[in-house]
Length: 344
Ligand SMILES: [Zn+2]
Image (cartoon, rainbow, N blue to C red):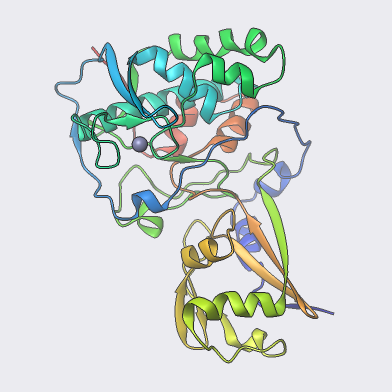
């Protein structure tokens, strides 16, 4: 018999509050054969101070320095050319052109934010303000992209990527006259997160908003199964003896705080408060929107969404674009109150 430890009410509640959501979920599934949508590691932001960057002196840099994590060299690349390798690495080229353009403007803004915040290099790579890994934004050279995709991918999609970059050349996102830090993630699971529920700072443009068109995301729902004893051992290996047994988990694990975006902020296990992020890391889950289902000596962990959930949902952007929204509408939906500015 199935015994729910934590009801999947989080997901259920979203269906109650977003009337259109259920209509758009689980429609047709699309086969994405290229690189999976990248996600950022939320831990890197956890201790990083959010800074405000004024737009008064923003000119588009011609060349930028990029630390190549694969070769350990500093590359000097044309600003807009570099963006093509980022977009091709951060979002499948099969996506709708308007979603790709939204990704370009986010990536360009993110790049500019990093260049302004770390003009002389970051602590992790002191010779350059950005790197080629997901620590900053994923970037691959044309040769690497050709090698990591199927034959004909480059011929089919490169001009589409170039078009998305060139048609938005110089465009960046601002809020209140400042360059924004446009975080993005793969799949929110129906609603994005307030920044302060995931990272420390409450950022006015990183607010929780509906993300109703993520039905095509392969990462919308996932599940892992482990034995009850493995489950208990894993938790107790970090938090010590918690008096959990196969028969008392239902009482021992209590839901604590849930964020506005529907992710679990805290769980209480045997009177100890544990963050959803720690549970996510412990079980290597796709997000903190999870629930446990116990069936005899087995636990199934169900997860909704993929990534930290803050800012633009890439699959949500794709879904909006397929519904007819343009890139500006997509960006203004996911980044509350922003403007799109042209760099000089
Ligand atoms: Zn980096």
